[in-house]
Length: 318
Image (cartoon, rainbow, N blue to C red; front, top):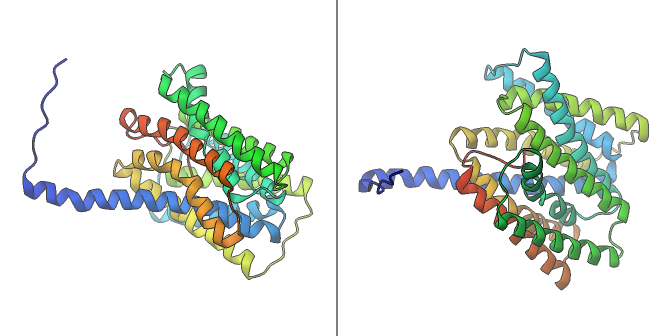
């Protein structure tokens, strides 16, 4: 196999490419920032409503808005009942199990920064499971990243529980959320790879909202204290996360910039922690901070390596 030397671009073409590249980088960074604030919005809204009830409300509004978007842009809809079922399964795993676990964990006192840190290890777990279940090659660098992340998360969780912040049950629910988003990623890759993000998101949110609503009826009292803080949190999560982040993700993928999002996902925990510090007074002591740094390095080892090999693959859906 021959390797051709790269062809130098004319100065004018290179100059024209710079704005496009900066737009792509800026959009990817904005997407990660929006994703990080999702944990803040959840922490802000959960005290005023039962967690699954709050989640069901978010999904109802998100489904309605995304349906309008899909209809306005003439998005194609799946016609195969099996494909619709696959979308529903992936939606329940991703949105109900993942977000439901995070929301209920926060209602039990788990901090936004800690929950973000635990679920941010998802690319590592996906890499390990893909090697076992899908036969994909897992490099020594990826296994090193997985080991570092396990050590880092253990340090943070141990320190937080020692300080009386959160409960073992809450941490277990964050781990359930991690399993949910990991299973959703593998399932979506296997069965939903060709879905249109607009119509597919409508189906997934509708299925997730149904599941969250059923969970609310079975396990909660549907408590909702309507106030300014709850309305702000709900509007933030629906408009900027469910609608804004999904639209931005769709734009990024069409431009071939999805790899930038994947390579920046390891910044979600520190960004969440930085935002949660002034908003909720959440802090990380030296040991917990060291654990976060170790975890971020571990996730970065996997994500930065995947950027070169899988340019159009995104490990964590919104």
